[in-house]
Image 1 (cartoon, helix red, strand yellow):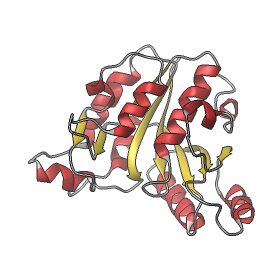
Image 2 (cartoon, rainbow, N blue to C red):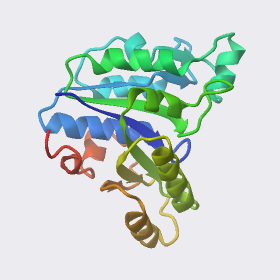
Image 3 (tube, rainbow, N blue to C red):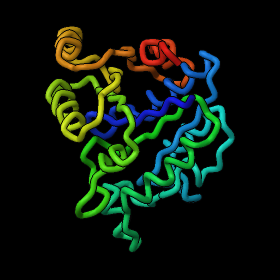
Image 4 (spheres, one colour):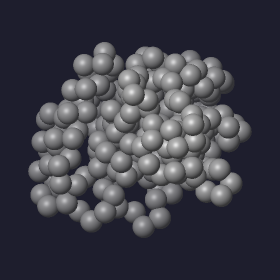
Length: 226
């Protein structure tokens, strides 16, 4: 049985890919075959590759082609709908979800679909990346960046996920920089307020390898019955 989840964040640059890679390694340590897809990414190198997608490829066990892991790679590092418009493309939630289903249907035991930015990032004039998650019907893992404003961002995101009819199944706290003021008190508030288990608190790591990040993640809290 495949367990598949949508990974979103409280904002951009909160460490979604770092945490996703840590989750993939934690699953590997549980003996699971893993795969991931970032259906749309904005910001690519001269070869048309996105660094987040490349990191996912290195962390997963399944030998997927780059085009499977990142089917829509947009050159400019701006909001996806803007990056797409600059190249004359139009993103659609149904099509992006179709790419994801192809990876989910493969033989991996544990699959992550990583979003871009936060929950309400637009992909066209009417749809957001949330529509991809709802089309797929996946449980959501929220990456909370530990910085000023994270409580508000996390609670608003959790409310939006529930309003869209999906379940927040877990969250991970990530420290992308120096510790925030009153960090433990902020974590205590989040633990009381978010309706899902905390899988781990990942400190700021100079070299956040998947293995190093996985040491702070208790994936068994999510996969007890797998």
